[in-house]
Length: 107
Image 1 (cartoon, rainbow, N blue to C red):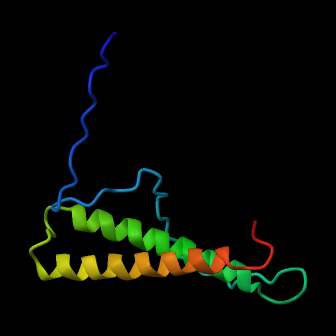
Image 2: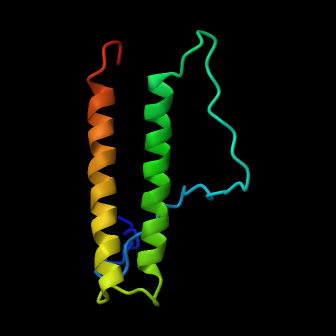
């Protein structure tokens, strides 16, 4: 019987937080345009929730990248603040997922 070579994975480090590989780049605009209204003439609450989720994921990605920057580091006050921001964002994202799973019509 042929033995497969074992594949080893690096253990998680407390010095580095894994960065999501699917992070979308954050783009900024110098101009502002007011939110468009939908065909019924009112802003959609569902669209606002989706935008909030997108914002939270972007915040989480940016905070993770900052935390991984060696200039910030985990030992500094800024590093601890970033860790708190990441935890708050993660809790918010989990709550949004829970709410969306309990909506009527969700499969």
